[in-house]
Amino acid sequence: MNGCVRKGSLMHVNLYTRSPRTARIFIVLILLLIACLYLGGRTAQYVSGFSSLVLTTYQHLATQSDDSVLTFHNDTLRTGQNLNETLLNTGNVNPQHFGKRVSYPVDGQVYTQPLFVHDVVIQGHHDHVVYVATENDSVYAFDADQVHVVAPLWKTSFLHHPDVTAVPSSDVFGKYPNHDIQPSVGITSTPVIDLTTNTMYVVAMTKEHGNQYVQRLHALDITTGEDKPGSPVIIVAQVNGKGYDKSKGTPSIVTFNTREANQRPALLFVNGVIYIAWGSFGDTDPYHGWVLGYTYNGTAFRQVSVYNATPDGQEGGIWMSGAGPAADAQGNVYLTTSNGTFDLTQPGQRDAGDSFVKLSTQDGLVQSDYFTPFNQGCLDGRDEDLGSGGVLLLPEQSQTAHPRVLVGVGKEGRIYVIDRDQMGQFQSYPGTLQCNSNAETRTDIDQILQELPSNSTGGFFGIPSYWVGTATSGQLVYIGEAGDHLKSFQLNGDTLSSSATAQTPETFGFPGVTPSISSNKSIPGTGIVWVISPASCGGPGCAPGGPGVLRAYDATNIKVELYNSEQNFTRDRLDSYVKFSVPTIANGKVFVGTQTSLNIYGLLTS
View 1 (cartoon, rainbow, N blue to C red):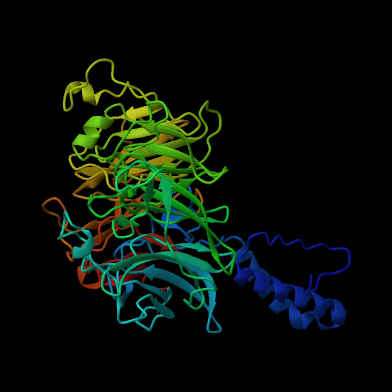
View 2 (spheres, rainbow, N blue to C red; view 1 turned 60 degrees about the vertical axis):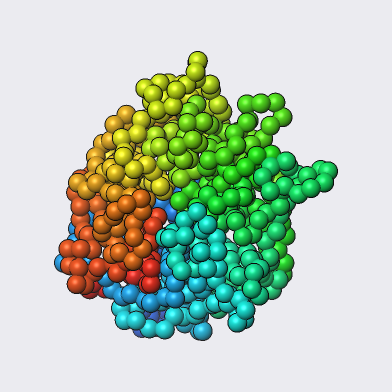
């Protein structure tokens, strides 16, 4: 058969969600088909070889899905898995073939997870682009495939005026002046990208004209870094309430406190709405937990929803160690709150400290369900807030009475498995609960699907991760508590295995680890668990500036370490570590932010 499509034959190509690169190849195929139909068989011998090449290339690309990472932990369920990684596997991730390719300098600490987009057209060139934001209020776009330091594809700074700076850390961390975020606070949360409009949404905090503290939501064009029309918008909000920092008058109003609100959680974009959450700067009062929702129509932002976790009380911050609120297929938003007023068991009350909260988005943001541990008062008194951990929504399960499940862990280290359709709310301890007694360790009081006791000595700061697994391993959930090994648990319908199926040889100090997982679907030999940890740690926190370690494990058996960046430290060492760091894996690369740089790891021969 020659390279032309003959009469009576049929070639069907399904484009559905292919990348622009694949679409261009499809256009070439169409042009080739037109040429063949026009010229007939006379030129078949000339086009046959070219046709075969194009068809082979298309078939190769058609087997690869776009593995762009547009949001924290890869998706709105916050699984942390990338199932479209076709280049990295357990055979080639080792010190001989894998290592640091390039380290790009940046102008501030990188507390955000890097984001990655395939095939972005910037200044007429098609690039694979990694985006990163800093605490100096800058956003960068870098070529993800370079092996030498080159200028960024673009850089945007929100410090446009001499009287506008990032916020000095000492201005906001009143209780903890030596906090890890130094010397300034600018962009702390992971942005989110909407590829349908090539827009990145990012929140930046600035200090202006002496003593004004401002937070703005920006809509950036990912091809230029420029603000889109109607961007940015200054963030303001209020709710009716009698809580901390309320205004005088009737009815009393609780107003969003720009200076005291720490926009730590990653942004969430779902059903056209950008959701933004806030906690505190190291428990510096007065503060509340807030969630605001905005839409953007290409010319203007509009605030469409406001939620305050403790409108009639105090605190209840939403921080989740940088994890973003999660969302299910119905658009419900899930999050955890921290130490603060809890009175949901009382008629007419609405303060939800130390709780898992489900928010309906049908009419703004309305709390529709919740779960609060029976020992909430003890947790609050010991500063073991539930809100140190983010919420993992498991993909919907079949053949179980509880198909929609979430997994979460708080600072205490207890693992909670909760039915998202009936979350359990609050169950009182029968009698008087003595904090720090054996009674507080009970796991049968809370009315949830499963509760596993803590085995860590340092608590939990991060978010559990999920991998679909292989036919042999089954579905796995990974949890990395401080003072403990990273552990994997098998998912059995609507519960986890009662003990870990495997654990890493290493014990991780504070703050533990938040894994990311890469694999090529469920193909054996492709699943890898990636974590970043400090090389050493002491005291209540890890000293900023100390080196970090990137580690890779076999996802089916995390006892097996494949690689760590200290094995060839001259080439691969991370110059520094940022607390709660999460690696991004895409297109054969691993992206890691530090105190001063963006580091790109990958196969050394590619």
